Image (cartoon, rainbow, N blue to C red):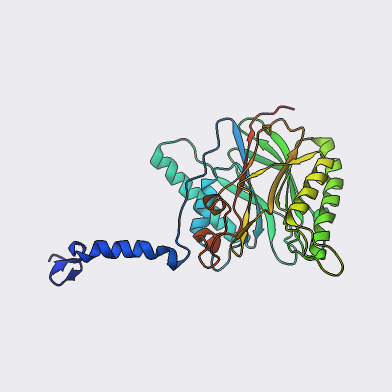
Length: 336
């Protein structure tokens, strides 16, 4: 018995003359359907002799709307040795995500005939605050050794906020070593939120005094929520760029330098790009190239931080995260 495909008036449907016209019509309507999935391969691999560090807020991972498979694809495509993550709500779900990622990378290595693929593990802070949003590190256990991991409650301004997470990082490939702190500071434009972010900088300065006595190479990164303050209660407005300028000033006082982001947004809200995620490095850290730029990938780069129709946001915004990954490539060598 021969099974036939769909037949329209006695002829196979794919040969019908209206099929090409229908295909063109569907392509024209795709933008109107909203959230069409568009995958990008715009993240170049980490270069030879480089150690890739990234920061990524994965929006309360996982939400009911989260496409876990797509989230894994974005994570794997970063080709990062170490990823500082924020807003992890479920450690078991993250473990499941990394199982998928590791399996995908193993399959790709077999198909391509390349060498040993990355194999990711993770560690999270001991507390996620009252909101249950944990910061942590995803790292390639073949290239990265984490030691001295410690939850920094000294950087947790109130019980409902997230503490930081410290670790000492050693590259198992080239010998690069440095200290790292991931943070997710208070979000919001009320004076309370703004003051908590200022207090965080004060606390960070104190925290770094002891840390730098051990190793001067420090990286501080994460979602620092530099969104400014609205005017109210007799207080003037603080623009987002003014808050970033203050971050730059305070970072300089701590011996840190904030890397410029390209393009200049890291998150979208109501169709507009904003600049919340940052990477700061020690000014004396020679493993950070002088021309280093924190590169922003994902849909932020694809739309070049231009306004987007809030009713037709990119697929990854809806089903992965409102934040885009930010990446820096360090020189993988111990120069101190």
